[in-house]
Image (cartoon, rainbow, N blue to C red; front, side, top):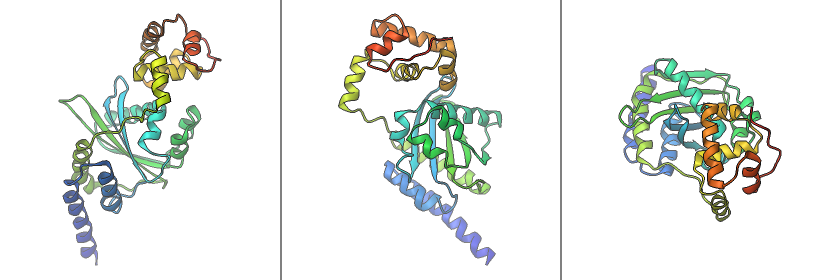
Length: 259
């Protein structure tokens, strides 16, 4: 009976690897995770992040059966998740680039810092596994974080070395999602002087009343870098201070002075 169970397990792994070669679209990747990977390694959400973790310039992809835990929802307010993924990446580096598990994970603090539909669902996840991939040539390392509602994440050690390279190859074949730009968002962007994504992120935290130091901590950059971004924002908007930037872009007042 035990031999038969082991054969079924390995047959599932080989089938998952074979099916991974046909993945070319997000929906195919999602179905592959659900049908082939979930029976081998239970998880509720897969969050992939890649890019320059030292600067915090990251891209994301989410695979989840929960509508609130989608890539588009994350991209609507990605700064706090950006901060989380940079910290998980740092732990991976400190662990000599080896995968690791965090059991009894508590995201309530993350949700308290930036309450939104994505973090509201994230607090329901109670364990996670982090698997990283180095990109020496492209300088865009990637980490895959599997979240689960159980308090302890079960990791089939032998399976990871076989499955994860194929998962990484599959997700690199499909284009990552970008935020859906609505007409009103495009008008807002034009009104904001063509600010970059990073500049708009910083402006978002400015209108939330965050200081340069706090914004730096959230985005995993220095307070001085935030200050330099603000200078460019002021130049593009033709203003001289934070309050004027908030007023010109139609954002609510009540911004605290930077420390």
